[in-house]
Image (cartoon, helix red, strand yellow):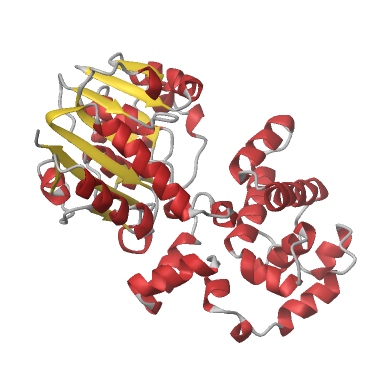
Length: 412
């Protein structure tokens, strides 16, 4: 990006979006999508500049707030523009930022040694302390640095329609370079961001955007053709689609959610992917006597593992005990529908033990008919080398979003 080239429309929109994120605790990506839909004349470079300014501010928010001496969105945007080299004081002054020279001086004079480690790492104090206790100071800093980076564009190749090599060729024909992901056997990583919905490979259902970690989590279910499987908290259906491909679209795959209306967003994706084995419904509508060979419970959580994609998520006030109670409740509800010998996979995109290992330990102690299965063994037979009793994915170690997964077998 060139210095001093923020245009008024870009500046006004970026400040408005950041203000809505900070004051109303709304999701930045949805706000940006809605704003761009209303401003169809805004070109790709304009959108990229607005997005860079908003997300750059959020990824370094605690330090910028210290320098700003408050939470005013325009002041934070101005400091981010100065600090990143996106603009200078003269450029900001032309945008109407009267205090631009003073902000530039404040930025230059700020002593970073006055920041706490949590402020420097842009992590809430309590979460930072928990990570330091578990990982140590140095790896906590590495984790925080990884979570401040922009996530790569990962895709999952739809094995129902093509091979990974064919998908790479199709993307190359659209002048996009894609390489296999290091761990997920059907994953691709793009060298640069692209408008996926305009690609023939996307419209034809050959590829779906999905983080490599999410793909690995779906593999932990070890879904097989002909089985009856449930995606208990299916949401928009990314893992549902991955499970359907593992099942070769044979058997029954129930996409369930507490709010069945949310599942309607999945319908276009199912159509593109050529998937027909999926049934949609609410969890409360599952017949009491219906049992499954495997159930994936991707539980609601703090989403600390997704901060690369959702940096504003770190602003949410967390009630971890309440989340853990909800997770235990959902897990116990799903467990009633696992057949003897069947598998129950508990997963989160959290990097906190309170939502992961502690929930699983408490569940197993109360439900003696379930025993842990080795996640590493389940993944190894599918070509993934990630040893361990549970699946633990860390952004600073694996280059994925943060995920936890545990697989339990019902013995009787």
